[in-house]
Image 1 (cartoon, rainbow, N blue to C red):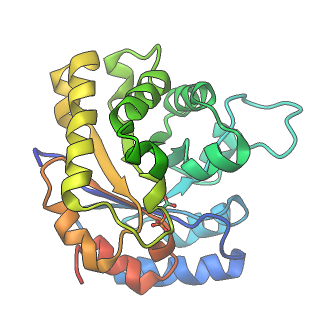
Image 2 (image 1 turned 90 degrees about the horizontal axis):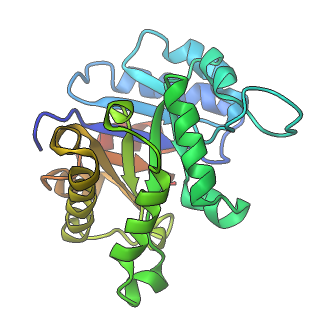
Image 3 (image 1 turned 60 degrees about the vertical axis):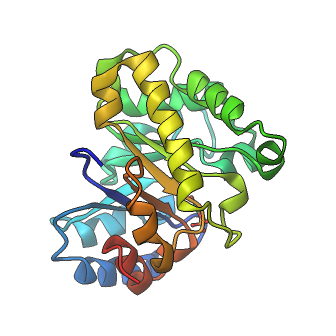
Length: 253
Ligand code: PEP
């Protein structure tokens, strides 16, 4: 890994009430207070963002949102804007998670608009992509990823993407307990980095962080992090427990 700073991000999905989120965030903050060599982020549900922001303020734990909408404001019942997320203390926004694509019909075009909005609002986008099990089995992994990254990053110029994080999340590994092998993750990360090099230049390819997501646990993080193109992890289930997540943050069993 060049000089890229690892990012370990926790996606809490639709788990935790406000008080549960506060408790977990408070514990995590203490458990990782001496960590200086990685960025740590948690994405609680929207309802807990503000409260968790107060708890983690001044610590090494940053706050992220699990989604955003591309309009600034308006009659969009149930949606949330970048300005709202910033005012709740967010620095990051997860965009295009496979659960959003699968259950809420989120398209590559919507993902593209959301990444644009995040960037123009100074939120760090974590752009998720990945193939399904059927696509991997039919050997379509690279064509699927090529389409997702091409559509997701359509219309951007290199300078706009300095903060972008890409999360490779094979759908078949999310919440299933099946982790991609470190070799499988490396192969895809190298493919994505070479796509960036070809389309957006060598400098960005060297600096962009590409994190892996899909059943990451304390037992597999070290091996994944040993891969030259794996720059961190997006963690779902194992981020819900502060102790377990803090071990992942330390690349520790
Ligand atoms: C995720 O939600 O992004 C994820 C990777 O989930 P899990 O770690 O539970 O597989």
